[in-house]
Length: 213
Image 1 (cartoon, rainbow, N blue to C red):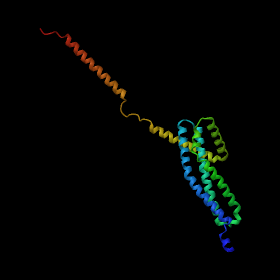
Image 2: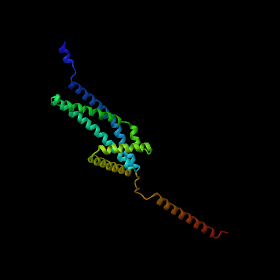
Image 3: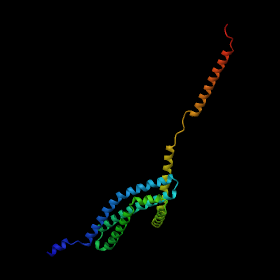
Image 4: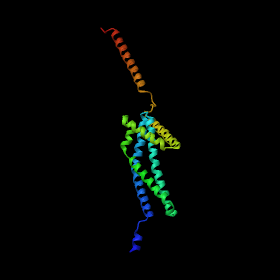
């Protein structure tokens, strides 16, 4: 009976494996949900650029970059922890694995907060509350993004500007290859005047001719 209980006992390693599986499943679910948020942030950045609001467009792109990195870093961390557990004696890396799982849970909690679409819309609003939120987000991103991240975001902003400029060019009407309508109308007006003058001259000649007896 004691041996059966021993075989059924859940070890720390079993619990760690289960926790990592739960995290991986949650991460996959969040990846699908957060894509809607990322797409909206991209659309918002484009809209703000068209309005000339480059500062807020950049904030939307920074937030988008930050969220993409959170997903990627958590995925990489879970993958590394799984490999660590499979290749090294669990008792030797137990502390690192448990700490990694704890950090993963914190990131997943933060990711869940990042998926509110209404927060994205606040990035474009001018109310005092929205501006305070924008300043808060800006400060958070400043403390969590590297110089390399910032360069990447600036390049993305330039690409969006080029794309929107190209789109504007496509929407502009093409110059007509033929003569402008007003020129044609002017020619028609001249021809009508000449026709009227001919008719007037003909009428004058008719009046001046002697009548037959």
